Image (cartoon, rainbow over all chains, first blue to last red; front, side, top):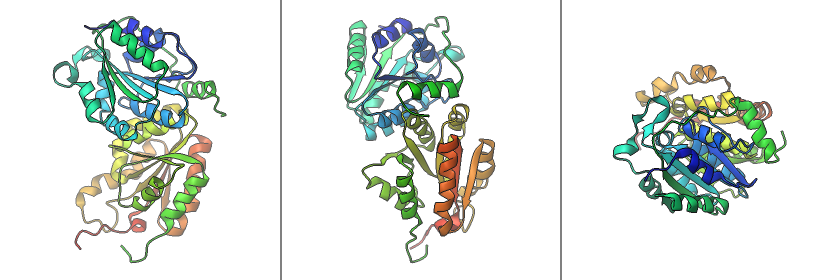
Length: 191
Length: 174
């Protein structure tokens, strides 16, 4: 079963509190997070492909009392697969890496990604030593993941299977310096 | 390598502590071995071993978003691995403090180190990094202090290049 991406993102982020910090990966997941409602505690990536999970790790280590959700696509995750190994040996208690997996590179014309035929990202996460790796299978599983995000106290990896569709783009702020400054201000960091 | 153990890695470690650097990322490297050891033994600085250097560029950005200062240690070959990820630091003006040990420039036994080692400076310049080159042990701390100011004070990329002469040549046969 494949979920509809905008509805899935809305479920994950519904009723989010100020202690949830979100790093949406380059591409469709950034538009999905923007569509779910802009928030100063989102740091949207318009580039840095393969870097989302590591940005999340640096943030999680710096902010141990807040929860960090990296929400990215399968193509973006594949480009930074080694970062799962790095997260596996680091295991902060406040980091979730969630991959919206549609098996295609949606932004470039729906070419197949490695997950479509051979690569199982949940197994990769597990093999990298991340103890909680969830393969979300349906709406119930998604609701369970949303609940875990609210009380996150471990390193978590999750794959959310989504349909290969292209809903209208919702484009967030694109000025990197402004995104950085508003994020830091929102969590109370002095300039 | 000379018989006496150089103390600049220890002084560099103390400088990072004084400068409130809280995350240090690295790909294991012989030239940085002593500094890495000090960092791993320290309770305040979080050490993060990477699979590739570009992960550290992203980690440092995340650290700054969360109010932490980070540093990235690598060998010259790692600079090439980082080029696209440097865009993150450039477009968002994230501080990026790097300590780069040189290979392929002096008494290098392995010719495969030369192609990347020989283009480190121009690559960093193209990526808008400020370069701070160190050749003598007594220059390390003072130069690093200036790089730290450039990185965190001005939110820029600062690369401290530790020359191969400073590091000493790799011993291939015992």
